[in-house]
Length: 226
Image (cartoon, rainbow, N blue to C red; front, side, top):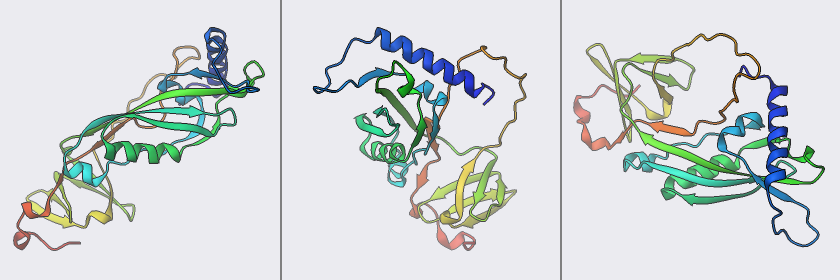
């Protein structure tokens, strides 16, 4: 990220101060001085966090289920996850999203330095699960670290088939860690401090290629599995 870490910290501290000044007192339990403010999802990039991205469940891919999953995350003043609530979305994709967010490690949110009082931060999360046709060409990332360039690829419940030239190859699905398109490198001028507010964090767009049933092809005409 080109945005300086110190500048991001100053920005979040300033934002929290403004929000605290504008937020009316909540109704916490007696003897509690914890206040809660809301931040947008895009400000996660300014926190010191380790993210885990949701996976696209095989059952959902096989049923061609797409959905926008919405959660509400509350971060406590000690940087732990105080609560994580499901709001909407397909149950399979909700479960995957919740499992991923539960694994996030939050090192610092700058919440405790505002006003000298404990601050809970509430962030609405939105994950978009979408099934898309495989890219052409497609790159298969193997468990041994190798990358295969293919002209076309299809994934079945028991294997992956890919084409190179006029030849069709079969490979075990367990030997592939990822299927991706060609990465494009874009060179931009170095950003100047204050040019923009950074956004980012985990990938909130989770895409996958369709998962097909094994019965849709004839095993007798397919090359052996590698």
